[in-house]
Amino acid sequence: MPKVTIDGVTIEVDEGTTIMNAARKVGGEIVPPAMCYYSKLDKSGGKCRTCLVEVTKGSDKDPRPMPKLVASCSTPIMDGMEVSNKTSQKVLDARKGVVEFLLINHPLDCPVCDQAGECDLQNLSYEHGTEGTRFEEKKRVFDKIDIGPFIQLHMTRCIMCYRCVYTADQITNERVHGVLKRGDASEIGTYIEKAIDNDFSGNVIDVCPVGALTDKTFRFKSRVWFLNPMDAHRNCDKCSGKAVVWMFGEEIYRVTGRKDQYAEVEEFICNTCRFETKDLAKWTIEGPRHISRESVISQGHYEMQPLKIENNNEETK
Image 1: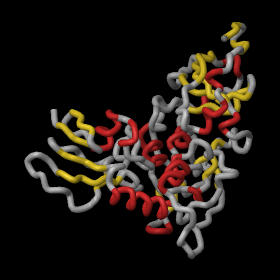
Image 2: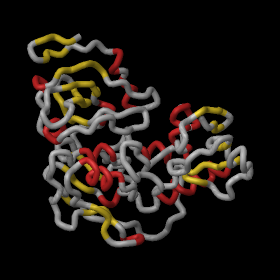
Image 3: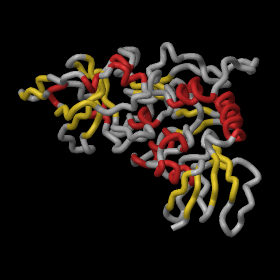
Image 4: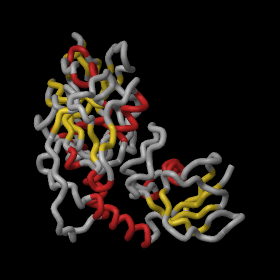
């Protein structure tokens, strides 16, 4: 098995593994950030450039460094390759520039955005962003539109990561939305409004790294750090029925798919579970969903609170 060294940590991986996935096997701070790459989606990655790393040694056979920074999500490792991520000043400077570029047209909607508290761009800008902006031109502005009965698109916030396009294309029978126009005029759209209407369309909300796609049944109801995320399941004939219910007291405010440590959905869920099943009696509560202690959501220490819910005539503690 080929070996790769990332920030001084050596690991053996399968042939063809990308630098990103090799770093994820190690975990911790050596894992590059990703705004467009999604391991569950084919052809994703290579759009946002936030995962750029420096290859200081190509391989044992060819030890020359690569002349430019490379996208870790699409670059396969070679035996003996050495990679610098957090230890490279070139990478940190480039990442700072990429964040500045992503924020050129992104509005300061954090105080009113439902994604605040679990936004990948918010976390990225906090770590690599600057205090001010050098951009003096007018930002792109789009009207909010409904692209389905349950989803509202805020194109102004979109960073063109293409995740939602790949999701709709790969987990549903037909794709009715994509990228319209070209260059700086590009936008995600359906051409025909309210065209998205299938049983798994709500998953585009879960994969969006920013607040461009919002759940109309949850919008402006609550901040995520006021809610308690609970693992729950139900019998469903369309999907696995395994989800996370976000509760305030004994009321379910929203339902999302279960995500791993890299904010990627483990199993896609149907619209019936996500939008139309907010009755607590229809769910079996398993217990608190573990959220990283660095997240603002975990600051309520909900995992330490006793859980006592009347569920399906049974008391869960």
